[in-house]
Every structure is written in structure tokens, then in C-alpha cells.
Image (tube, rainbow, N blue to C red; front, side, top):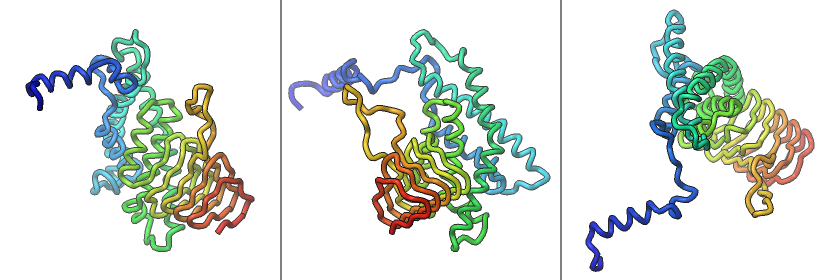
Length: 293
């Protein structure tokens, strides 16, 4: 250290870090009393949702048919309260209206969105059941549906994705991406909540799979570990910034299989029944039933 005292160095650093030019584009000013959505709370949301969607596998392991309605009712009540609070935080966080001094005016909207998500849980369970069947039918090493639900990372990731996708459809900000990132951290499977994925979908092993935001995946599609469904390029506007929201990821039609570490890039269509072998690099459309090995 030079002639400056420790206290002076610390004070100078605080002042430098607090300057507007240092904070530009990385600082978010919170509405009073409402922090950013909590990753810890959203993990609890997922834990509760899994216990509702797959009773007896997550949450209370002693649940019985005679008490299932009670346990699901308790779970739904807790889920609604917790999710409503996190959606409220997300709505407030995303608000750019300087006239909003608190979030009372959007509290009812948050509660409605939470209720709408919960109303979709029966359909989410129905689709997840098809995913479980696809995983079982597609893996000769699987011994039971129970093993699939308890152990397979694809089901954990797809549960998060299918909940996050519904929240995305409901136009809930930030939270859908946070939920799929929780799954990414847990399983190594990275699915953007905006992607559209049909029924009977499975990912074998799963580690390193990436599914981009504008992907459209049909029914009965199977991916293996390390598959990337990504964008080939990013068109720029007149200022040199990426143009957001345009379709830029692949379309996989029904009954497609993509083997490990294959990469499919751009807005290409992989025809119905196509099989893409391991380590392939695909940037063009394929015909139905085509085999690329």
C-alpha cells in the first residue's frame, strides 16, 4: 500500500463502485419492499409441484390413497401462496414504470397467475406421464416406471420445463427462466422455457443437452446426451445488436431420434422419423425417414 490508509482505500473503492457510470446496465432499482424472486423459494415451488405431480415419490413418502386428497390439498395451498409471492416479485422486478411505488396494484394479477398455473397441473401431469412412458420404452435398462420417476434426470428436468413453459405462456417474467436454470444446475439439461415440446418426449442420460428458445419438437422424439438444438447465427439490426424473438432454432417433427453429441443448428426442419447419428453436424433440412449416420 502507498501513503493511503486502509480506510481511505476502502472508502475510495466504495465511491468508485457506486458511481452511475460503473452501475450503468447492471443495476436494478427495487420497488420498496419487493426483492428479486428467490431461487431458494422457487426450488421449494418445484419440490412441492413434484410432490403433487408424482405423489409418493417426492415429499411425504408415507402418503396413501386414503390420505392423498388431503396431502395434495395441503401442497396446493402452500404452492399457491409461495408461487403467488414469487410471481409478484417477478412482476415488480420487471416493471419499468417509475410511477409504481409499490406492488399492491399487481398483487391480484400475481395471485390470478398462480391460480391459473395450478389449474394446469392436471394437464402437466398427463403429459409428464407420457414422458415417463417414453423413457421406460426407450431404455432397456429401465426396470419400472418407479425407477424412471425416482432416478432419471430427464423427468426432473422436464417437470421443471413443463411448469416453466406454462408460466412463460402466461407471460410471467423472469421466473420461467429461473426454474429451468434450477433444472440445468440439477441435471445438466438446459431447456429454454419458451421451447415447444410435444408428448412422449425423452432424453436418455441427458447431460449436456441444450434446447433453444424457438425450438419446436413434435411427439415421440428422443434425444441422447450432449445433443445441441441451437441457433446457427444471430441477425443484427442497424445498430449491430442481435434481433430478438425471431425463429432461429430447429424444428423436429414426430418420431425423430438424435444420438449423442449431435448438433443441429438454425431454423431447419428435421423430417418425421429421421434418425441423426452421433457426432453429426446438421445445418440443413432432412427428408422424412432419412438416416444421417
